[in-house]
Length: 328
Length: 199
Image (cartoon, rainbow over all chains, first blue to last red; front, top):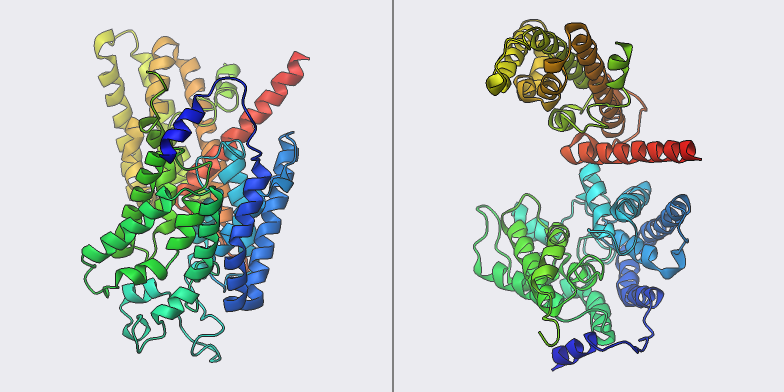
């Protein structure tokens, strides 16, 4: 029923009412929705997580201001979009990265990922993920070294090789694989006391923020539902690569960046489809690519690339899911 | 004649203005050394094929001119390839497939078709030399940027000890990033200059 109503709204003739929405309002609401995950990152990864987030956000805002000045455009750093990009980028970094790395990523994400395409509203790809991809392929060792969260077992031991649940399953490190005897229990994965990027580990915190955005209507259910549903279904039915350990679908659900990607990145208003049907297709594609990368690809995690690849398809999806013009 | 030479370097630079030969440009510019090797090899082929094409331009029937040009170009590429194999095997190995692929470099065929087949020998020589220098210059610029940022080195020597280079710059995405940003920069400079000229 909701869909029909919306379609009616879209064809309403001239005298129109401003809905009160604005870019700052959307962006600061998203910031608010990221608050639980921010607090969770502090709780599990401590002071270092805060440093990464601060550096990333400040660099993103600074880069935006400098480039907008250079381009002779109004400086819009208070609209929060650069801050959201910076925080999302920080969330996708592991705890042990050197402190200059989030700065480089944020500057690249805003500079090349966003402003090279013309700024907010014109960028094809999610700037935060562009920043992450740049630092990932520039400094791979930093981006694939994991430290245990503060409260985990062995956290007091000095040198301990740690892994993310997905990485451990890929490398077939039996002792680290989620099991009653391993480090990660399902409850740990839900609360967030596992190895991973600082903002992705706590499924609970991300879910809180995601549900908040759903209620506010900034995120529609199609994208996260299709994305998460596809990953759960495919990782459940498809066989794993030889030598890897098969994880239960709920491990795939909780063990990586799926919630962060599905609620906060695959739902970016600029780089994803605008119609409900388009969002379903987008989420489906993301889920498909994520599952294939996780099960058979070169990296244990594929959420980031799946969203970037689907970003490229967004104009095409929008073209094919354009609603029929009323009366035709 | 001087004009035909300098136009290839700035005003009609094959890489930055004509956007020709991007495939070898992107693939080979991972270091200055490779860039110079590729640039010199292509310049050699470009100059001699331009001269020969210009010499035979009245003999070649119009309908089969492209195959004729290709045979001329391929002859010189074979020379370059055998020379590299004999005297510079290291460079030959790092350039790899892109040495024989000079045959289909669109700068060379482009100059043969657009210039050498319509102009006298000396002008064609000057055109080929200019285009070659322009191509080499562009390659060296790209190669230098990518080697410095991506490998923290220049001519293979380490620059700043302790600096961790951004590996992506010597990977294929680095080539696209560098050339994209350079093209943007040159377009900006051109636009500024034109704006100033219009005032």
